[in-house]
Structures are given as structure tokens and as C-alpha cells.
Image (cartoon, rainbow, N blue to C red):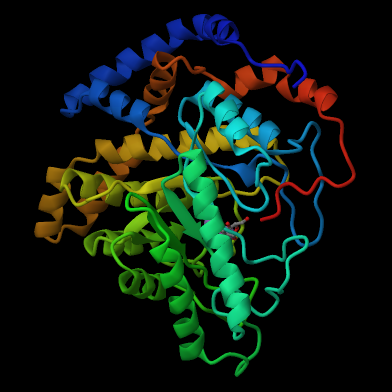
Length: 432
Ligand code: AFD
Ligand code: MN
Ligand code: MN
């Protein structure tokens, strides 16, 4: 590979040195403020530092809509470029140590070299994602009318085989989970027999489940609509729960925040799945209308906080047998994906830190006394606390940037990549 531009540790150190005195002042002030309420800032900073969320490989390319895609400059051309961009995000935030790959989009010609390159960049691999919502080049049978639930047995078998291939690729990369999202469903009333379609799905999913290594999980991702607009086979968390339960303990439900009807109480879904041991993980993003794939916390930061409230509460109660997997699933159509993914990862840490600040004894008392106002006040007190100094200090202590977006812009990384990665007509990154 030819020489490529990299942001240096020394760049981070130089920039951080300028910002540290002000940060230290803010951090000390926050320490005093929190200790008045009985919270130890160091405990929270350590937990934030230990937090990690996986990056979606498909998120580092500029996204698009079904109307158009406006490519950015210096976009990643292949898996190595994508990993290089992911490494920048992790280097500056220290919050994204793993990447979630999507096959066949990311299918490497040399899997060993891919794993080695990632290791050199300090990255690991999270869940692998299968794709049976599109027809891959040269594919024998079409998924136009479905994949795992297709009426045709040979098409179902082909989709199962693809998922098993994803497991094999994931094993070679060091992944420990397969995420399955299907586009199967129908566009017309009567087009599909609801029961038979789900039966076919379950039969296929069982074949995939049987191929999972002992220490793997299978995350099932539900979505209420799109690309099918009348009905979707795995439409909601209820169907997801039923499927995961039928499959067995390694099958868990994945909650993509954008895959629910507007105004759905997602935090309660999270609580329910935790209660019954089936929460597998998340695809974090935000939305206003549907599966918008907007930046996490950009539309409804309070919802994100309430989800982390459930997660922290459950962790405190020892309710998890396995920690849920955190992944981002976003489409960046009008921003530099690297900037969006950095600020999104930090946004998750922010809501996590705030959730740890909730006075749980006071909340419990308010609930017991049916003091609705005090219950909300207790949550709001944490939500309204500016924890930015905690996040910046956690990054700094791990060698990341105090101001990741500022440093990224200062570095001119994208400009360098514009020269190193000349645009080609066929770039298709960012289909979501
Ligand atoms: C879809 C789902 C799913 C899938 C992704 C592909 O959220 O996670 O892998 O988009 O771009 O809407
Ligand atoms: Mn998703
Ligand atoms: Mn989606």
C-alpha cells in the first residue's frame, strides 16, 4: 500500500496540551458539584472510558436516499479505506474500538490481511451483518420476493447459505455475533400468508442458528416497514422475541432505534427485553419520521438518556447474563461521516454518564410514593447535568482528543484523503 496520511499521537498531545488547563478547571468544579450529591466523578469517568460502541463499516461512506446520493470527497473505496477512517474515529474518541462489517459489501479478498490491517490500526471486529435484502452480483436466485421466508425453498437455502458464509468470515475475523436483518414482507394485502411466511423464516433461521459457534450470538433485528410497505415478517419486538425464543439462548433481539413507529416507547421495549433475558444489542441512531438513520441523540436526546437509564438500572441490578452489544447504524448524507460518528459515539457516552448520575434511591422512593413529579425531577436533574468535562477527561486519559471534531478539522484529514483516494464513478458506499 502507498504512503497514507495518518493523524499522529503527537498531534493529539499538542492540541490537548492547549485545552487541558480549562478542562481541568471544569472537571474539578464538576467533581465538587457531584460530590455534594454523593456521586464520585472518578467512578463515572472510568465507566465512560471503558464504554465502547461498534462502528458500522457502511457508515463511513456518505449515505444517500432513494432519490439521490451526493458523494463527499475522499470517500473510502474499499474495506481498507473504511478501516482507516474507523481508526481515526477511535483514535480521537477512544470510544469505538470495533467495526461491524456487512457482507457481501465488505467481503475481503484477503481475510488475513484485513484482520492484520485492523489489528495494526488498533481495531477489532464486532458482529458481522448478512445482506439478503439485495441481490449480489452474479447471484443465482433473486430476493425480490423475500429471502429467509421466500416461498421457494431453493431461494431460502441460498439465503441460509449466505448467512453461514457470514459466520465463517466472522470467525476468521474474530467476530462473535451475526446480525440478521431481512427485508422480507409484502406490499399488498393478501400477498403473503402471515403464518406460513413466519414459519418459513423460523425454519431458515434455525438452520443458521445451528451453524453458530458455541460462543456466538445471533442478533435478530426487527423493522416495522420498508422495503416492504404493507407487512414485514419480523415487524416488531414481539415477533422478534418469539423468534429469538424459538431459536434458543444464543438468539437475542437487536433494537434499532429507527425501526419503530413514531412515538413508540423504545425504553420500555428495552426494559421488557432485559426482563426476559433477550436483549442482544442496539443499532443506535435517531429519527423524526421513520428509519431516518440520523445521528444518535440529534433529534431526541432525552429518549437516548431514558434508554441508558434502563441499561444502567439493569446493570446495577445484575440483570444481564451477557452485556448487550452496542453498535451504531447511521447514514450520513449531509455531514462528514467521520465527524458524525465521532459526535454520535460521544453522545452515547454522554447519556450513559448522565444515567449513572441518577439518584436511584430518590427515584425509587418517588415511585413507591407515587410522586410523579419528583420522579421526573430526579431524572431531569441527571439529564440536565453537563457531563462534557467527564467525557473529555475520559478521552484525554486514554490518549484521545479533548476536542475530537476540532482536531480532525485542524488535521485536514479529509483533504489528504481527497488526494489519496481519487473519486471513481462506481463508488456505492453508504446504501442504507
Ligand atoms: C437497515 C437495517 C440493518 C441493515 C442496514 C443496512 O437497519 O441494520 O444492516 O440498514 O444498511 O435498515
Ligand atoms: Mn440497523
Ligand atoms: Mn435501518
